[in-house]
Image (cartoon, rainbow, N blue to C red; front, top):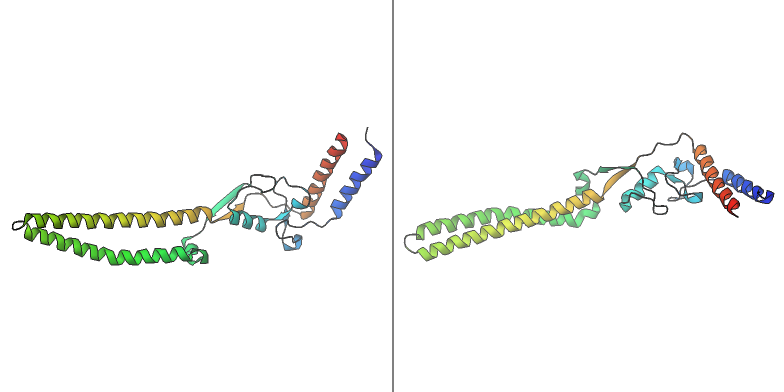
Length: 205
């Protein structure tokens, strides 16, 4: 049988929760800053959160679950456009590296092409008079072409890897839960859940 005093304590907890002003656990603002949700299994003062605050935190942390109760959120991840990568201050070093490699590519490509063409022409002129020098020029041309292709492939793969990593980690996150019609409903649900937990505790005692 239950104890009357315990019932009174539970009712007092329920009444205090109903009268307590709920706030977002991330920004610590109340419902005046936006509608409060309870999207995970957290309870008490940690249960409520603004949708915008939670989406911003999930985007910044590149996470898909609650850090407290480990509840997995249903999310829609939207990739950011390339223009944002080009304008983002955090990508300034990568943009400088990309611009430097592009300048080198524009400078080296015609230089390598001209050098290869001159070596091939020289080899053709020396083919009948000095076969060894002609062979040396052909080997030099092949070496220059190999180095050029290798550097180009490494540079392209490096920048593609940076871009794909940025695109994968820096995404806009949209929480896939319906907005509640009234914040009061959230508050009552939170209070009922807490009341149930408190009742279970008293029953176990």
